[in-house]
Image (cartoon, rainbow, N blue to C red; front, side):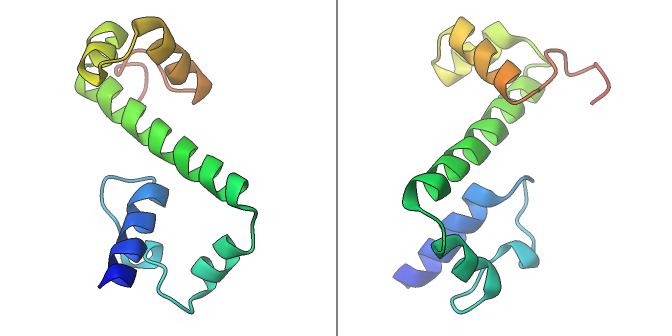
Amino acid sequence: MRELCTVLQRAVVFSSECQISAPEIALPGGEAMESDFGRPFRAARDEAVAAFEKGYVDDLRRRHSGNVTRAAREAKHERRSFGRLVKKYGLRVSAFEGD
């Protein structure tokens, strides 16, 4: 059971979409899981954090139609630092700018 939870957590963290598809679930012994373990811990962690941050920030940005102040408020984050995250991941400020 614990192994299944780990597999699903990894799929959620590394998924770039709102839904997880079958190819994104790396089962033990599968190629995707083994290749992740071949990297240094810090590199794998940094990639997971970046994927989470980008998805989280983009979701909030879209839900608030690009309004960084409202998105930051919902995230309980300072507006300036939230705006830096939007910029860091190359996300458009306005949800209406060609999404």
